[in-house]
Structure formats: structure tokens, C-alpha cells
Amino acid sequence: MRPEYILKLLETGERVDGRKLDQFRDIKIETGVIKRAEGSARVKIGKTDVIVGIKTEIGEPFSDMPDMGILKTGAEFTPIASPEFESGPPREDATELARIVDRGVRESECIDLEKLCIKEGEKAWEIFVDVHMINHDGNLIDASALAAVAALKTTKIPKLEKDKIVREKLEKKLPLSHTPITVTVGKVFDKFIIDPLKEEEEVLDSKISIAVMEDGKICAMQKSGEASLSPEDVNEMIDLAVKKSKEIRKLL
Amino acid sequence: MGMKTKEKLIVKGKRLDGRKPDEIREIEMKVGVIPNADGSAQVRFGNTIAMAGVYGPRELFPKHRQEADKAIIQCRYNMAPFSVDERKRPGPSRRAIEISKVTRLALEPALFLKDYPEMVVDVYIEILQADGSTRVTGINAASLALADAGVPMKDLVVALSGGKVDDTLVIDLCGKEDNYGKADIPIVFLPRKKEITLLQMDGQLTVQEVKNIIKNVLKAGETVYKKQKEVLKKKYSK
Image 1 (cartoon, each protein chain N blue to C red):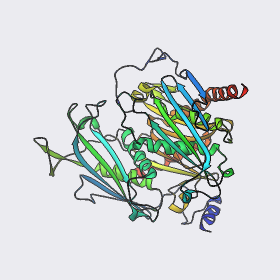
Image 2: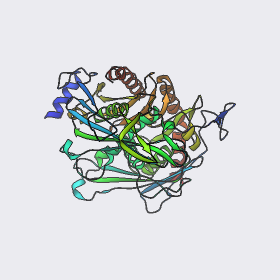
Image 3: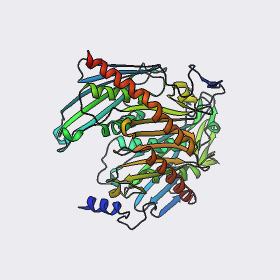
Image 4: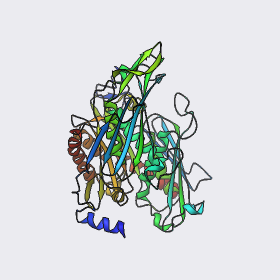
């Protein structure tokens, strides 16, 4: 049986594709892939493939943050990307993924939302980050978070004429101040692994997704997976995520 | 997180509600509060009130969702429309969907689901009044409700938040601290073996601060663990 084989390998510190436990697959980042979007990026990690498109609209600021722009993140596990994904509204896993991506961007204060207010309490730019899965071969979270940041970095805000958006005139760059990188660390037996394949993901006991800022600070975390973790595990996983985030950062 | 205020949240070592940084709000726990449920509990941390009801283990329908070798657990975290300042529109938000999922994963390791093939344990959490740390308050209620339902458990499940407010590391964030603080880390764990079953974070912290908060929460959680045991003993010693 395949899962048992994969587990047996992992137990001895090996992986089906010959990588080291803490080694990412090849990562390719391509930006400007969707012309209609105000910003976009496609990230491939091995065979995992996701596209993030950024759209802008004008909306009403939240009443508790009247002078800030608005960030909204969505994700769809489109049936095209995996035989296990079904049509219909986003389910639990897609919702969780969108919220992990959102949290990394939001909590790092990646986008300077204060500069996106048009009229306090009335009008502000809404930035929509939409994650679209093209092919699922594991580690969708890291790929999506990376694509989101890469797409935001290329985003330009359209011109406003009498409060109407003129989309053909992209005026200024989206104001950004930070770059979060999300690294997911999986655990199986007493081993920690990076960038699991889909079939490896299925045998992991547990994992934590950790968003790291450029100064090494942590800005978001999420444990998922069924098994519990010791405090020592968590400490080691954080250290590993910080270390790997530096490698990924160089690709941007 | 995210919202800014010029107001100091900690003045001379005291928090908005007069607490010390490592002090948990007043805790009140009751079990057996919902007659129809197999097990139930209400937990209050300061002004945050959560109620949990457990139904099961019972047969799972539709049958195709049954697992031949174990029971499944289903969780629903829900905020009452009147639990927050601006009325919350009924129905599951994206936030609630996510919290329901991490709650399920937080409780699962405590249960012997293999003993109940083809069954389901339903855990319903209602937040009646929200003043920060609602998910952990709800999980404490769920822990008691599961025990009250007589579902065999490896250990009780203890939930507590930690974080950073102004420049101070604190325990058990209230609503304002949650909104205006620097970081929030909800943690759920099984105390006997210190197994962490839920860990989330938002805000900005150094690696060392994260590690310290986890350590502090595990330590302060002992108080919550003791309270849970007391209230269960009280019910069954009557």
C-alpha cells in the first residue's frame, strides 16, 4: 500500500521524491499572469499550482476602522484541481486556507490600509485577494500565501474619476510595507517535514502554518491536523519555519 | 488585532479590568445546564459566556458518512446575534466555519473515538456573550459537556488564550485587549501530558515571545484544569 510505503520512508528520514525532510520542491513565481486583474501571480511548488488575482473595488470602510482600506481574501478549491474537490460554495478546508492567507497578510500589516481610505467613514478601497487552485499536489497553504504576496507586490490601483473606477488607467502602486512568508511544518513520528506532497500530507500527524516577517518576527500561526504536539515540538517547528522563510524570501 | 488606539491598555502594571498580566478573569463553570443534551456546560470568563451541549455518541446519518472503525466528531461554534455590540447576522460566518474546524481538531485527541464505530459525537457551542477569548471559553465548556455526557476521555481539555498587550505578555485577553492588543494566541491542551491540540496566533511577536507565551499559558491553564475537575466532582458527589 502506498501510504504505508510513504510512512515507512518518512520514518527513516526519506521521501518518495528523494528530497530531504526540510527541502522545498522547485518553486516558480510568475507575476502579471492575469491581464484583467489589478495584480496577479501564479506560484508552482512542484506540481502544486495556484493563481492569485487581486481585484479592487470601492466600498464602505468597516465602522470600527473608518479610516482604513478593506482587505478580503477568498479561496476556491475548484474541482479542476483535484478529483477530491467538489463544486459548490467553499467548504471548511477552503475557508480555513483563505483565513490563513488573510491572517498572514493582515497581521504583518503587509498592505498599508491606512493609505487606502478615500473618504473617512464613507469610501475606501477594497482589496480582494482571490486564491484559485489549478492543481493540488500538497502544500496549498504555502503556495497560496506566496502567490498572494507576489500578486500584491505587482498590484496597481486604478484611477478614480468622479468616484468612478477607470480600470484601464492603473495609477499607483498598492502601498505595501511588509512581506510575510508562510511556511508550513508537518510532523510525522518524531520527524519534521517541509513542503509535503499531497500523498505525504495524508499521512502527517499534524502541522503548523507559520507566517514570518522580514525581521524574523512571527505574525500568524495555525495548527491543523489531528494529532497533538508537545511544547518542545512547537518550538522546533517555529525555528524551522523561520529558517526556511529566509530561503523563500529570496525568490520574491 | 489590527485596530489602533492611543489609549494605554496597561497602566502601572494593571489591565483595563484591574487584572495583573498573568491573571485570569473570574471563572464560573456549571455542568448539566441543558436537560435535553446528553452532556452540557456553561463557562464564563469575565464577561464572555459560552454554553456547550453534547449529543451522542449516537448513530450517524446519513449512513454513508459513517466510519466503520470509529466515531466521528462534529462541532459547531456559533455566536448568538445578541452576543456582540453590532448584531451578528445569524448563520455561519467564515470565521465560525474555521473555528468549528479547529475546535473539532482540538477535542478529538481527548476522545476514544475507536470505541464507537459508525457513531457521531455532536458538540454544539453557543457564544451567548462575547468579550474576547470566545473560542477558548467555548472549548472549556465543550470539555465539561463531553465529560458530563460520560464520553470516555483521556484527559479534560483545557483552553486559554495568551498574548501581548502594549509591551506586556498577558493571559486571558478580554475583548478590548483582543482588538487593540499586539498579539493573541489561543491554545488548547491536554494538561496531564501537556499535549497541544489547538494553536493559533495573530499579531506580531518575536520568536522568543511566542515561546514564552506558550509556556505561560500552559502554566496558567492549571488553574482552569483544577476548576473543571472541581465542578465535575461537585456534580457527581451530590
